[in-house]
Image (tube, rainbow, N blue to C red; front, side, top):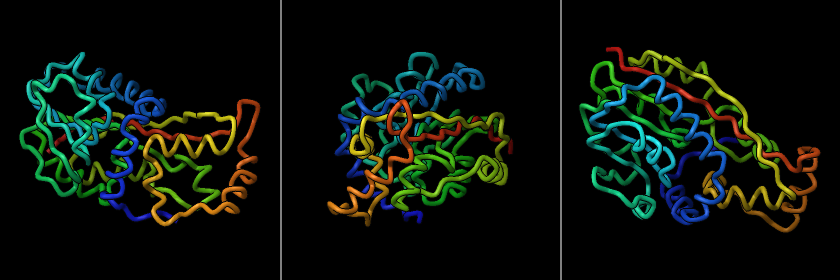
Length: 252
């Protein structure tokens, strides 16, 4: 069962996980680094005006600031306390709130986002709005997650987001005036000593925002631990991440 997106709940969870996220979101940090490497390959170095959607603890922001020449940086996230992760706000304009409901800046040279767009309730409409916000031939670069993301949790609890396939994402982008320059996915795995540690990891990274109606009872928790044995190997209890990377350009 996929869940509807409750942005207030997501904001609450990520605000709560703010400090622990920095420590525990190891995969998200790796994904930001990989996305940054692709951005360097495809984006021009001079990007006067950039919007980042879902900046979080600033993994991608810091990488981009170290390389790209950005005069005006618009940073979006759901909760105001996110600014605690940014100590040098000289060129930052904050856009706090649900990006699907906010007015986007215009004449942007690039829109970037790492590990955030999977939370959108209507991604094609957001692509359409991003297209309008970008200058002609400007760029969109993002990472999101694919169909097998956190597959262990979905199989055992039925909880999780609805993810798009590579083909679906490509089609959505092309239908909204983008040329897809790169789209690919890979798999990253984390291993834990016990299924309880898997749940603690998810909570520390804010991901439990998806489980809006799920309540653990002692019995269901024990059953979860037993059922998770099927995902154990020599490395420990596995948790799968399925990142997707996209570089696209506005063509019309």
